[in-house]
Length: 181
Picture 1 (cartoon, rainbow, N blue to C red):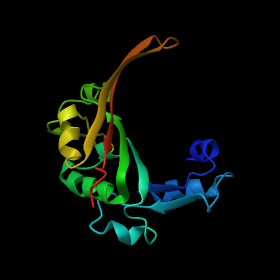
Picture 2: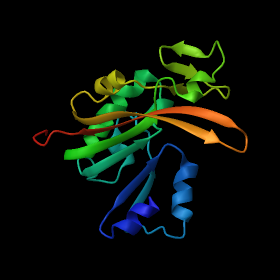
Picture 3: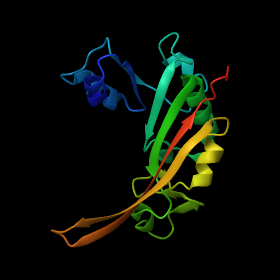
Picture 4: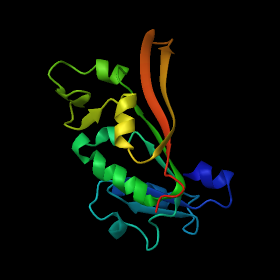
């Protein structure tokens, strides 16, 4: 959030998170400016997203950034999340997405017995994690225009520990149609 407001003096940011603790971290930051940042607790899957937002916020957002957000949701809640993202965006607004891709090291390290359904696993702490494929995103963001989807495969090397880590992330850009009301 703070690099964004530093880079562009005209930007206004809704800093939404499910965690009240994360919202408090934003508020307590030395660069926090309530005129430029509106931090709020927000459930992306809520039945009535307007209830958690400032009046008039729906349909006004230029860009929604979802970084490692949707993989933590149960896939049964994705339609609600996608609907809410679309409601937030102004016509022509974009969703920028980055999350775990299928066959990421985090997926491959999960022990047998953690698979719930195709791509959905439970972690040791009881939280769920989903590993996306391109087709998942097109279904998820149905009604938005696909601008780009890329799978980012990287070999990360920890030389000190002599570890090779094969990471897979998926990133995408979708746009709400300009004529969408």
